[in-house]
Length: 318
Length: 280
Image 1 (cartoon, rainbow over the protein chains, first blue to last red):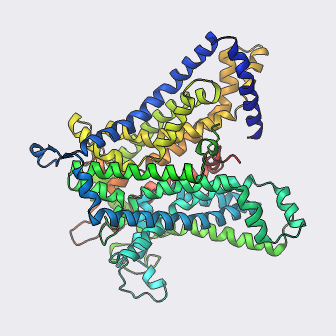
Image 2 (image 1 turned 120 degrees about the vertical axis):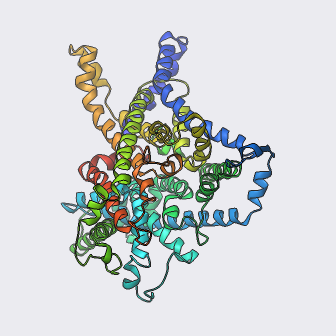
Image 3 (image 1 turned 60 degrees about the vertical axis):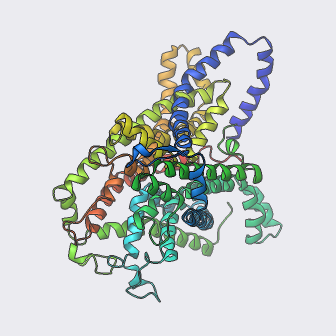
């Protein structure tokens, strides 16, 4: 990595000198070729997301239900005021934020522990551990949701029999908080490997001699962790955090499979889905979608401006 | 890393064992569930009393076959097509990003990042409406197009990171040694780039295979419905029978190919997921 960086830095340093000879035909040809190659991918990226968000913005200004297309009517921002004054939106928002905070926090801790083990274990166990960790990553979310739902389910489950202090007839999905707990468990199981692999890459970047020096200077294991290891992986922790937070904020599959949003477990994505697909309320559903998009923008803004996460740099793009 | 004491080493080994259990237990549970007979599903224990393959015969030739087999076909077709398109387009884009200087390079990368964090459900409402008007609702292309929003961004990043690590000078070196530019490209660059392209394809395929939101929103029948969506519409053989066994068996079937890919290409996938992800 570092050698590429120096090579790139050298290339950019040399570039102005070359450019001064005039916007050469060569540079122009290179720019044209660049766009010929990257253009199609760019057009599709913008098309598949840009069009829907603009369409959603437009539709959100109408009262429009697919079952009554003739009653379509322009109502300005009224859909938004309906949503923002509805307790269902705020309860979905609260659930989504809670799920995001809890899963990301737990995953960061477990993910770091897993990364440490993967980093330290040597010999024949190493490939086994690294392969095992990929299994939850590869299992589809819906399958994970079913596995956890059935494990805690009233008739199919074995968890009630195994867990101490839980009655045999305890219904995890009848109560909001216990249902959310199982939803979080499934989400955590499935996505922790991704976080731990990102953190593992970060761990590999912590200079060994720095750790040795700290050890020689008499730093305890705890001090080494908090004073040397963690500060040196700040970039990768931030990226893992932001990506997982944005992913958790969109949580849908686990909720839909386990409760369909019943027992007060609805999240923002489930709310948008229920408005559009189940109730065919295109206007309201679009407004919910737009608001969800705005929330994601706000999270990105806070991460980048307040916490200074440099995504481009972290992704190795500069 | 320094020498580890025996006790410390043992501790990491225990940790490794915990990881393996963590990763495999839920999978073992769904497999165990899929082997339970209908009367056995509520036995409240992890393992079946008597293992049976009846749930599997149910989804391959019994009641569930009409729903499961077309869904499996749809999933495979949609995921392969969207992976192929994404990888080819991303290959050109990543080459340009890794090798060429052009204005707007950052714009391409930033939009890939933006699309990757875009809430997919936001695309569902407008697409649902539009697809119904133009006849793409419940069709294979109607799924392939939105799947590109899932597969293309990750393909662009992963491949740009791979391509940046290729020693492109070797192409010129080969030409100096007398190879034609086509020979230099085919004999030098293709073998260097192929692993990156291949790894990207696997990761993109995983992501497409995992989709549920588009599957249940933009399809409704076995014409285009992919497996994750079909799973949620499984019903038991009668109103009073839960489809648990059939769902578990189908879940195991769709898990096998991706887990096998993960096992075989473990090294490459780990490298692909973390390559360029961190730069301190």
